[in-house]
Figure 1 (cartoon, rainbow, N blue to C red):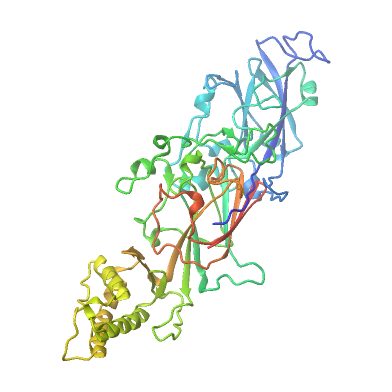
Figure 2: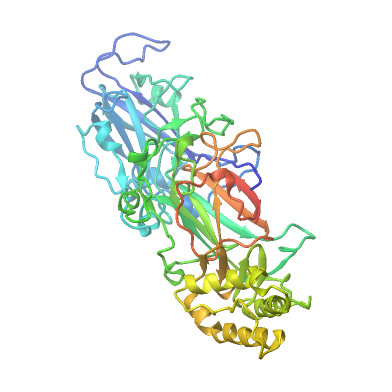
Amino acid sequence: MKKKNFLVLALAAFTFAACSNEDIVPGGEDNNDVVNLEGDAWVALSVQSTKTRAINTPNQENGTPDESTITAVSAVFFTGHTDASVVTRIVKFTDDDITNLPNRTSAFKVPKTSKAVLIIANPQNLNRTIQENDTYGTVNKVVTLTTEAEVTTGVAKSGGFVMTNAKGDLEPSDTDGSPKDLELFSTATAATSSPLTIRIDRVSAKVRVYVKADSGEELSDVATIDTDGTGWYLNVTNKKFYPASKRTKTAMNTWTPYDQYGLGSYRKDPNFGTGTAIGAWSDSDPSAYAENYFYVSSATKDTDIAWNKVNTTAKYCLENTQDEDFNKHAYTTQALLKVSYAPTTITNADDTKVTLANGTDWFNMNGIFYTQASVLTYIEEELTNKYTHKAPAEYATDITDAYNEYIEALSLTPVTIPAAKDDAKTAAEMAEELKGKFEALAASIATASEGGKALKGVEYYSKGICYYKIMIKHDDSPTVMNKLGEFGVVRNSVYDITVNKINNPGYPSIPDPDPSAPDEEEDRYLSIKIEVNPWTWYSQVEPL
């Protein structure tokens, strides 16, 4: 799989300042600094929207109105920056304040014990009640979703995307991102003239999948692709998130817009870390894994998946990141692509070409594609040669044997192949008779192979459907391989995946999340381009 680059994103900016006209001692240029920690001070909040933009390119993509609308804003003030710091006050913007964003500045009273602040836009969709005296650890404790639908009914709800501090954790900060205390002033006017700017990010990530050839090119050189029958599903998505993120740098440490403190574009989600925390996959008992991820696997019926249309549909999910040791298929959010694939390279034993329509069964045996009808021509030729040979028992019948082993693996009765020639019959007669026995099994083979099978080295593509896993890349480069931050999806980022070539068949059935498969070694087998937009925008192009 060829490496391409991505982009990351930031959303809106809040500017605010605090001030008080009581309990003041002289300080600062205007003698406006508050140093007495009793009583209340004034705080002025101004909200400014920003563009979302790509990480590795200057491309930008603004959020849609549904992704950018703010209906409620809460500023949650704390006594400090630690998990033990407690909420001093929750300031809620009025409808008038919100209606007049970004040009509205309003002043509010907060306790002078306030040293840090968390901005939450659209907090009603966070599914968390915050009260005074709650600790920051409690406010920012892990949120766990129970259904995939809660993504779009909650944190990524149309017209109400949840957004929090882009830095992650609390503000304000020094230029290097280290915590510092709020600076308070004696008057609302003084506070407004010295605002503190806080940028906010959407809590969710966005993924889009396109299947389209490059200009002047064909989507496939070796198959007919039914693009109308092509769909995708966002697989292995996180169930858990922190309201305020925890930034970290990638191995590449690529510059990111709005990472104003240089803390890094990547994040540590609640599953980041050890196998115990991440919920290791188990074929026999995936219950621990299922506590952390929404996913489909070989146990999932194709008809039970809500396939998305390519080229049109965007899907949202929670950020999902992992330590580089867990850059594996089981833990990386991925696009599961479903493609109707009809090889144009199938031939009969006499070299005549097979014209295969989409929706027709075919299979891969030892790297060669067959239909049930075409493989019989090879079996007949092979068996004719066997019984013509001076020592039939020693003649290799690789195609016949492989096909028979597949039949047996389906729990069907294989065809018995005599070791010696029947003197009462010609070699051609024996071959034709045995071919007929295989032919009689065709319907049973198709039924037993429904949904696709991979048995005994044979891959059977029921109705010609292939599945591909496309690991979503975050900060990728040809110079790194499965390093920290290379894979994953991060909040406030858009990941565009463009499949521009499909020359290799994928999996014959929905694959399991594989904990042994490294993300960088997936060769099934697309040409993929990924691009990222504001939001932050990542773009990935892959040939399959």
